[in-house]
Amino acid sequence: MRDPAENKDLLPATAFFSRPDVDHEKAWYEALGLIKQERDRMRLLRTTCDVTDYSESRETFGCCLGTASCLGAVRGCPPWRVPCLSREAFTNALTRDLGANVEFGDVEYTPVGIADSAANDIIDDRLFKTATREQAVLDYLSKERRDLFFLKSDDWATEYEFRVLLTSTDDEYAFADYGESLQAVVLGEQFPDWQIAGAKEICTNASVELRKMIWFKGRPMTVLA
Figure (cartoon, one colour):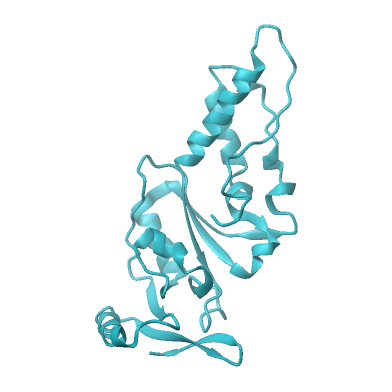
């Protein structure tokens, strides 16, 4: 993720009652390793609701032209082509393919984001016991999931993110059919003119609208391609 607070390993603080029979430093580093291990098994897909001409309702959303690479990295879509998706159909399709391990939500933006979250602390004596350490980490990630994955600084508020979180997978990539959710494709301002005819044919065959981004009075807008 582009947010510096999100692309670092989680390093919450802790506190404990010292006991002579426990190597607290070793146990703590093992707990941090488990947090990283479990977080690395999660997958996050981000979309945004601020596509021009589709921003009046959060029922239809896609990826804004400024952050188009977010879907490109997942679906092989180059950043000059932006898919616009029906929210309800999209979430239904992913739930069908990914099951109970998928979670959806709008990102919440606050002045300090994760920096003021309870997720910055994990106070749990189970972390310092080998038999209960893993469960303590899993409980922490479950309890603080909304703040860890759906909370950001309001520096990013203009992105209007809607996220999909896959809470656990052992595969590098997670694949799911987007079903009937595709509503339109928006071509970027510099999309090659000679490719527009081919794009129209593809969109016509898929029964979706094809639009093109232009600049009008200093702001981006879309028109039928």
